[in-house]
Length: 366
Image (tube, rainbow, N blue to C red; front, side, top):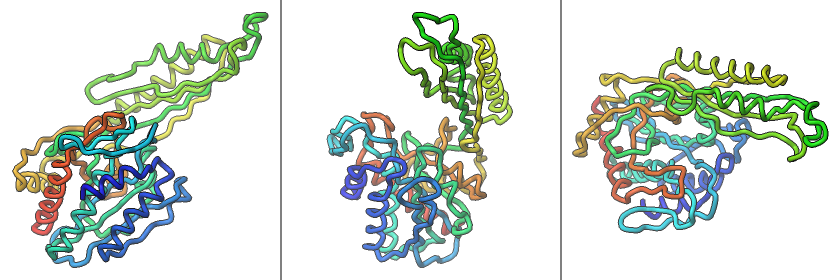
C-alpha cells in the first residue's frame, strides 16, 4: 500500500487533469480482477477524466456502503517527490504532498485487495473516485446517484487524528463583485476618473471577515483590476465566499456583503454587479444516525476512541448527501493539507485500512 500511495502522490493531478491518476487507479482495479466503469462527466465539468465506480462482488446481506475519495489535489507549486522520513510521508519538492485525498484512494484500493484476498464477507462495497472536488465538488455533483446500490457512504477527507467523526459541514456561497468606474490619466486628470479599485477596497474594509461567529466564516480570496499604474482603474473584480452551519445566518451574511459592495460603489460614483452562487449545501448528522453508529462501532473495534466535531469545509460528502445518500466524513490522519508541510504517518495509512475493514464488518451486521 505504501508503494501505491507514493506512486499516487508523485503523479500530479490538479483539478481538470486527473487522467494519469485515474489510469493508475483503474490499472490497480484491473490487476485485482475488478470491473469498473467511468462516467461521462469529464467533458461537462472540464476534466480529462470522469468519475470511476467499482463494485466488489460477493455481497452477503447487511447494509451496502460506498467509499468515496477524490482524485484531484490543489495545484502543486513545484515538483512532488514523496519521501518517507521517521515514519511519515512528506514531499521533498517544496509543495503539497497530495495526501488530500490520495491517502484515501490508497486505503480504498488496499481494502479492496484484502477483502478479495480473504474472501471477506460484506454487505456490499462500492468504490467511487471523483474528479474536480477541490474546485467545488464538481465530479460528485455530476455523478448519477442512481448508479449506486449503497445505502450509506463514507469519505476520508478531514485533516485530523483518526477517530474524529465529522457530524456536519457548512453550506457555502461564492460572491463575485465586478466594479465599474471610469478610466482617466492618473497624473493629468485624476478628477475625471472613478476608481473601481477604491470602491472595492472600501467594500472589503467594511466586510466582516474571518470567523464571524461560532458557525460562520467569510473570506475575500481574490481581488484584481486596473490596467497600468498611471491609469485610474476602470474595472476591479472581487471574489469572496461565506460559509455557515446555519442557513439563516448564511443568507443574512451574504446579503450584508452584497449590500456592502453596492454601498461602497455608490460612494465612489461607480457601479457594481454581484453574482452569488451556491457552492454546496451543508448537512448535520445525529449520534444515532446509521452512518455515525457504523463509524463508532468500527473505530471502537480498532481500539480507537471516537470523537465528534463539525467541519469548516466541504467535501464530496456534501454532494452525495444532497443527492440523497447519507455520507459521513471521517478524519484520516492527514496534516497541514494544501501546504508544503503536508504529511501523513505511514501507520495512519494502515490504521485506516483496519478502520475500513471494521466498517465493512459493521455494515454486514447492520
